[in-house]
Image (cartoon, rainbow, N blue to C red; front, side):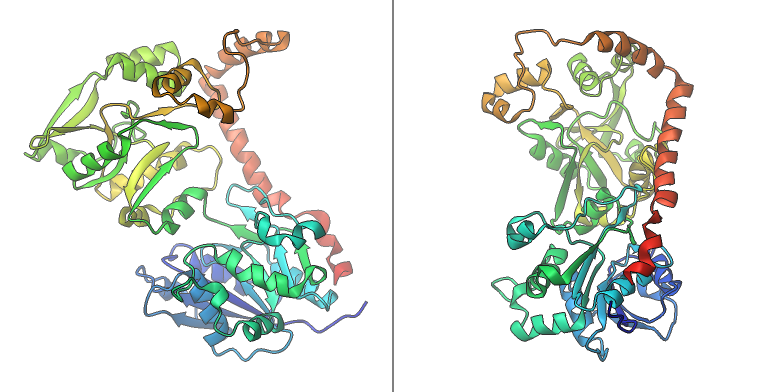
Length: 483
């Protein structure tokens, strides 16, 4: 095997408003056992002083953009205009500023691939998400690579490629029109796809290696990415099992108009406040003369629907039937809203969404993390309100009689053709003998509070175990052979 010299790694680190993450990101590079690297940290015009927390290091080049450019443009500028004098076999790596390298020898693994495989021009890696789970990344087959543009893209996050491959791309497309729209502006989304697709096609299948050893930690959960990345003026976030009724958007926007200091608006009455009444922002409604503040019992129909959708037991449903909800009414427009927060669906302004993130996402099941979203909004002094009438319904994973009734009323029978639940609904659902015996037992056990806490703790510990232990597989032992 031909052994080449240790390649120099040029690590491009773009970031925007990543003050809480960027130091950990840089530290994960600085502490690497592999030391032949340069980092180019490019601030995309952050307004949270992110650049101030980057440590001084002769191997770190700091760049600041005078205007917001977005990730694709900022990465291109960092590669081409950072002042780095490239060698033929330098390797360019891209590392998002809100993520970090997983292990102290992550760069050693990358260098080992290029050192041991002189013909390698590009790599893409397995990574670990903040839940502790490995990503969906897997190597392309030859047949998949031949129709690369027709397949789901899998070369995301920690991307590495040789400078000579990048140089060849720039020779073929000197004005990088491949990265731009018809007006000559850099694409605002899908930088992974834009950067890698053309490089992969130029490199060719034999010169690309997939590294199955996780070396990259993708820190942000989906909600953080969603709230950070969307460029719309308004952002609506919803679980995939929410049924929307006509008028949900108009009524949400009416509440925002009537309550200018609203942060989140939900399209279903909040019968169970995530903060359990401990929020502080709603107190302003009690003294603001524009509003009438009172307590009202929700309609029985709303409570039954809420209980059905969230599978509440009869005792809790009865409690909700008897417990009044806090309602605020704007006197001029007579717009009413229920006070209280949830998070299975909500509408939020973009500028507010940017202030909410980053949110913790370390555990799979955590009451503290679960309420962090709503707590952050309350800390901003913003209201969390919902419509008084239910404009959404939590369907769940089955096509039950309640949803069937909605479909029939709206004349949407054709949606059943797309449902995986195709059983004859005129017949009762059948259960096997084992399920008939097991389900009542599980129902009884689920009511034991100590068991619920125990299972949640065990579930979270498993995620922690995956994150700290299983992300270091024995495959590391094969590294000297690979090199």
